[in-house]
Length: 336
Image 1 (spheres, one colour):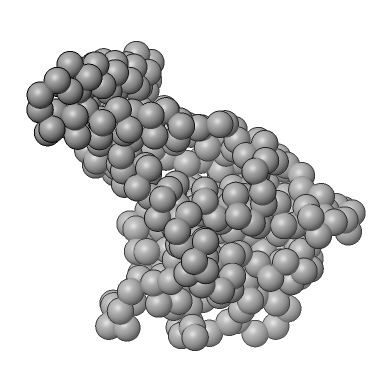
Image 2 (cartoon, rainbow, N blue to C red):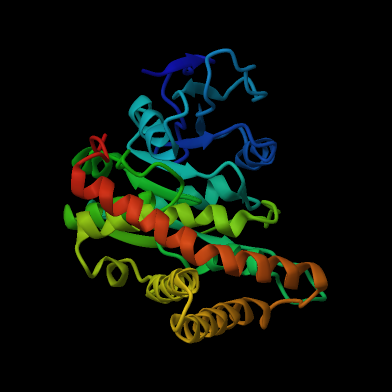
């Protein structure tokens, strides 16, 4: 169930502005939401879905024209579903709460959607990631910059309501902000709709998520297991993704465990343990250098890459195993 504040405005929204659109923004209360709402402006209908846990949270500081729903901390997929199902317009555009639509975004959105044929189910905005000037980007900044070339991500993605109804919307078995948008795009295309890219521009600022952020992001490996279960072995190619490093992470983790196991047994196996340990060290060093080389190579960045490159392989494997177990035992829950 969702709870609501700031009731929906009465009357027909957006008369005379082209296709009627509702902007849906799920949020966990980031301060960046204020800049997102300011950039959207007061033209389109806006629904913010408060996905913070707990019923006693302070109300979000949003303008009076913004409608607020509460989804109870069930994740971005569930929050977006609550938003589009509460809307009545033929188009729903999803924005993240840390993006800043460019000047004239609302008018550009109208132009993008106007006269699209009925078989087009979605339109993606252009995403720009401004990087610091005067130095090479860090590993985290490069990862964010990769969003600029990603397909059908919900940083700025408009869907025709009929496409959302035909597919049931976002799959709520995806717990975080990872792969749930790619999954929906594949199902929209499988339902017979085309997806296109528009001309509107949205900026995605780079933020500092902390020293261990790259380790936390490995949770997405569990979602990769669900993608394989739903869309088959070739799902990466279908979304235009890269192969990833999971196989290398598995090899690195295996060498590390083998070295520890052999060393613990002692005796003649110490030489084999040393060989396995050197293999682990070489694989870890290769992974760390692949992340250090393109970056600024500051002492802080080198220390972060060295530490996280040791931790990432076993954590990535653990999350993938967790995802596979949930899929195979049917513990991922219902789709929505």
